[in-house]
Image (cartoon, rainbow, N blue to C red; front, side):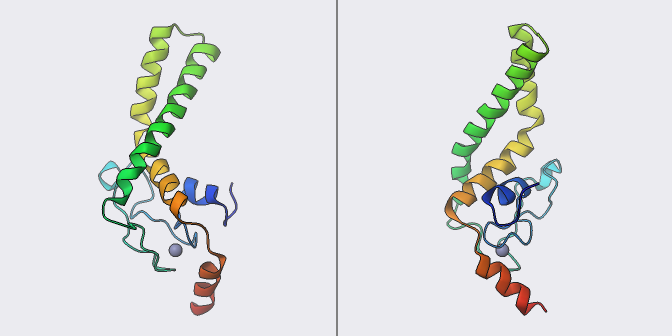
Length: 133
Ligand SMILES: [Zn+2]
């Protein structure tokens, strides 16, 4: 869907923000909730340390606020305008959406957060490729 090398690729797949070679997460399925926050410490391809500083990912909570709003607005628009629900039902739809998509919101927020600080490095991605041959 998104090409490797773009920030969107890393954001939507949870791939290492520097080399895009592997997932940052020990379990790529966010709905295995017990593994939701479990991440590798370093990328096995480019050795990037994901947690730049202690409690680095607390900052992703600011992002998750924005991402949550986006999901809430989408839920409202779909239920209120497209399905013609009452405001009360639309409100329930928003709450349900936020609960159901919570794991995705958490992962997206972390991915966006780390991609604010790190960018794709073509050299790192290529370098490791050569070494592994
Ligand atoms: Zn990497």
